[in-house]
Length: 352
Image: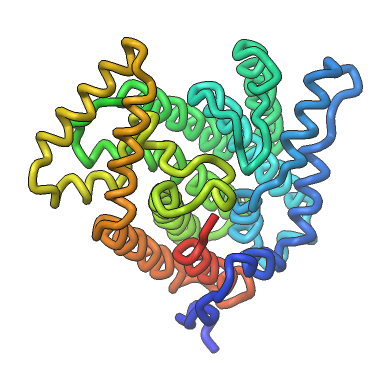
């Protein structure tokens, strides 16, 4: 078989738990990433040290570092070279950066739950929690520097700038109910897809893959990341607190508009009336009527949940995933390609 021949991906997944099977080819690498992330300086301030270990220990899917490893291991000799240590450092950097952004997100959103567990700002002041997130950003930067690759360091620094810019845009766009739908795509690229791009491009670049393959893997990361966030935004309406690890409908209650909302509003017979109602309750909330706002947001969220907007958003995520699969067609056939194709099915079917 030609090394760059197109192959079909694995059979569609039946349960979200299959993520563990999909990540199995890089399990050994992920174990090394986990150990690296949990290594702390014994001189570190004890409360920060305990919080740091707890936050890292909560895990998550570890999808982003897995993408670094999979992209790098398209070079089938990478594991036997000293460069693989640099790949591990990049994978740890990407996941540490992701975790740091979650810590700051929880502060911004006043979130009490993350993955079903209390957030750090439940027990700490906002200032202390921000500083804990800053420490994690510092560790992420340190790991990226360990790669010794100016290209990777540039990717890391640009991605951090993109993420911060996106968070600021999201924060200032809250309760802006007349905003354009295109703002949503810029926001989810910054929030999610940019880090997926950094993972796949960085891993491929570190293992010295041909530039054409690096580009295809970066594009795969972009399309997978965009779909991942769209599905996340769908689940915010259709999921429950137990599966989400946070209250359903959180985005709308925070005044953040996502793709299902835009599709729902577009087909609403009186969109201007909806916007006027939201603006009225948002103003009332600022004056102390929090419950009125919550009731209005919950009512609209319930309407979105049972509307055609959910399937319209899901169809759009499917389009991104189809492009992600297409990005892989020119790459060698191996277990990493099969897993990356399978991850597209996982994203489409995931419930958490």
